[in-house]
Image (cartoon, rainbow, N blue to C red; front, side, top):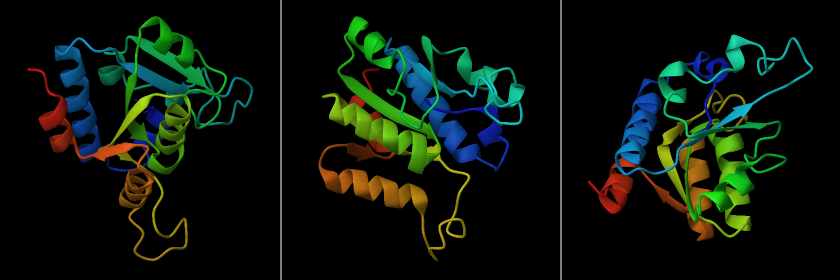
Length: 172
């Protein structure tokens, strides 16, 4: 899970937030490990990700479910973090990716996980982005669908919608 106040306060993300919470509850019921990422900037006081700023925090209603919170300084949850060690210690072989921003943190983490030998599932409708077609100057661009399609077509990452994920992976 990759989500922080500074991103969530930029847009209305009620559908994504609801889907992420459903995923969290499913993981909790199945007694699966929940790992959050917190992108932090330890030096730039003006950054939205400044470590001591409330804007850089994970919303409390989600963070309370975290078994681990990984602090990172790049889009990938793996680069320079404890995620590899945590995954090894917890014997995690399958990572499920959700959060924000779809085309940065979620996509980079999914690719990095695949490159490290993990089985990866990207839950497309449990990701969101503050960006849109205007930012990328690509009329009609649906970022979540585009990233999901690229990852899916790669054959390396399983891309599902939440309902599909629940059908396949729900134990209870």
